[in-house]
Image (cartoon, rainbow, N blue to C red; front, side, top):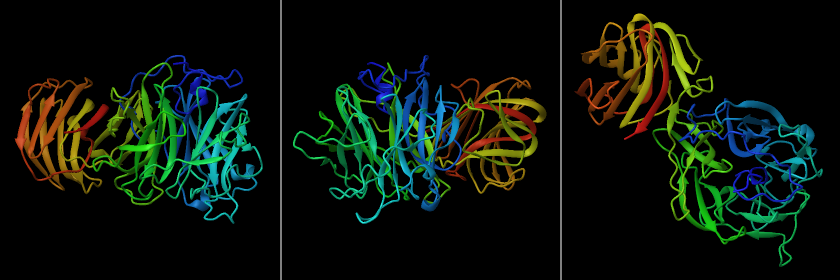
Length: 497
């Protein structure tokens, strides 16, 4: 595949077209093939939603909605990275101060480059009828990070057509150079042609401006990409504030369809996150490596605007259909932060690609997950002290204090033991085995908990050091903990069984 298309389409996956297009070359060295955001989801700090992606000037860009009450949605931020791990924030790339007609509810930015310029399409004002001012606008800038200013002084699409609320737009440029805008809320989707100026609408061969392409189940959040000559329309289903928000897709031989729903490819996982939807797609230029960027709601959050940006690997079957996306749980701390973790006692920080804590009597840090049957992995080093450090799993009711949680803990200690116990604001030792442990040395600790069976491995992953049966705590959060020791943790992975 040509790499010029990495600029023309946010999904970055087709042959290059048009010498007049901004030639945003792909990153000089492609990132490794990740299975997920290996340094942890969410990928950026704060409440954000509706992410769209682009590659500009050897950098990956993510443009999300600021997930706040409508009246406070008056700006858009962006984030960029050279490696999909470390992200730089670009605040206020677009604000309502630079769009005369936009007042609030600035949503779903869609970036693309052409004609030596960078364009950002957005929805504003959440109009409910054709008598209101608002809809889909287009802003332009000389740099990917803006500032973007209104390109035409009015909405590009300002009316309901075919029942589609003018929101949630995506812009796609096909191999022949024709640009299209896909959009629509209120369970209707339209496509229209964009002229080469990217600021006005063209017409189809039959003289019409808009064509309805609504597939079964469509609610909002259009996304278009092309792979191996096939056109993929993706969209969101369900209510955006609910747990069942999800992503489905269709395939077609034409950019205007017809699009027949094939399957749901991304949905909530009761062990990881809810409300997973409103996606975009990123292809690493020159490869068949694809990622789905989307927002999701942490399990402990119920507010509609409590949404975070994440990404996971997206794979295809031999016939071109998309495999269901798995929201994986990993964190190697290579991004220098511990987003998504919550601490209870102790002093926690990330440095040198490791999650470190000072010595404390029971300081712990937990993810916002809820696994039942799972394999838990971590690399752990006891850096000082005579106590222990290791994994917490199936935890609930967490607080600050030595055993202030309900759940299980497996750890290693330089005293020469591996231990497994149960906590419930007290401590019950379930198992212990001799294990030579050298302070400062890294050990791989694994727990496999399926039903009432709990097995603990250290180093040798073929034979458990401890094997017990206990059904006291059936599910809960995962994390790490120390007792009378300082420690460093790395490569945390939680895998559903």
